[in-house]
Amino acid sequence: MSSDSVAERVFDAVAASAPEVRASLPGRRAYLDDENPSGESMLAADAHADDLLADRLTGVDGVGAYASEEREAVVEADESGGVSVACDPLDGSSNLKSNNPMGTIVGVYDGDLPASGRDLLGAAYVLYGPVTTMVCARDGAARDYLVADGEREDLGDLSLPEEPTVYGFGGRVPDWPDAFASYVEELEEDELKLRYGGAMVADVSQVLTYGGVFGYPALESAPEGKLRLQFEANPVGYLVEAAGGRSSDGEGSVLDREAASLHERTPVHVGNAALVDRLEAALA
Ligand code: AHG
Ligand code: MN
Ligand code: MN
Image 1 (cartoon, rainbow, N blue to C red):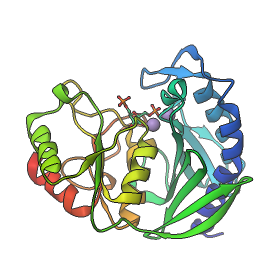
Image 2 (tube, helix red, strand yellow; image 1 turned 30 degrees about the horizontal axis):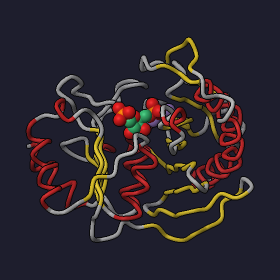
Image 3 (tube, rainbow, N blue to C red; image 1 turned 135 degrees about the horizontal axis):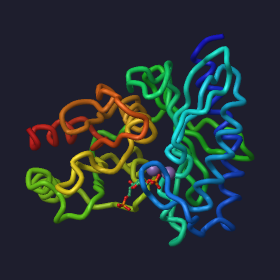
Image 4 (cartoon, rainbow, N blue to C red; image 1 turned 45 degrees about the horizontal axis):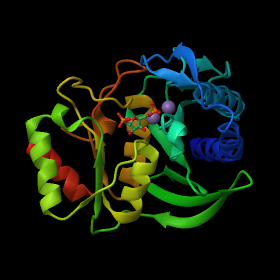
């Protein structure tokens, strides 16, 4: 059994679950009296998507473990071992209240979690927008899909447009380090347009579609930023690199960042290589 086919089976299982995740949202917009391991309030929709994906993904042949940002510990799927799937079941779930887009992110790691981004065999995200789309990457290439009736319909190769037009960064502007704020001012002078919606998947989809840069940077109050290395930064960094772009934690590819703990956070920036190179130069 090749690892490549495990990644494809994981992508198929995520696509098959997507209509159920979407259908589960309307009745689960309330907050639970519970926090996830990152200390964030959980919506009923976060918990439901996590339970659903844990069930489906641990059932995929060749998957040995499942972990998500909504649960403390890794779930062992198969005593005979296999790949580890790290999942952000609902990315941008605070958008549920205002009815804005959300996503699901998965990374398929060849190894026990926490693992290095260099151990990724593949990564994918689903975007629950006006239509359900999916981007999947493995072997250094990214593909775009429409998800219809739980099946992936191939829309072709995905690569970043050469001319960037949009940017979006998280965190409050007064909380940005000065060097980062100066870099963003330069982007405005270069006539890039601000697009920020509060769901990484949706914001990265704009970057992949129109070219540009997205990030959740190191903040003065939170030097590690907000996004989680295993569940968000590595998989999305892998996808954007496969689409011909770059990822960075501020110094180098997020994929080279050492993984010390399952729920650790990291600053992350992804997009056109020239813009990410400039960011690193600005922060150096
Ligand atoms: P999640 O819903 O999985 O916790 O992810 C939310 C993340 C990410 O999607 C987005 O880029 C960022 O948080 C938005 O944060 P702000 O609401 O602070 O802008
Ligand atoms: Mn998220
Ligand atoms: Mn989430």
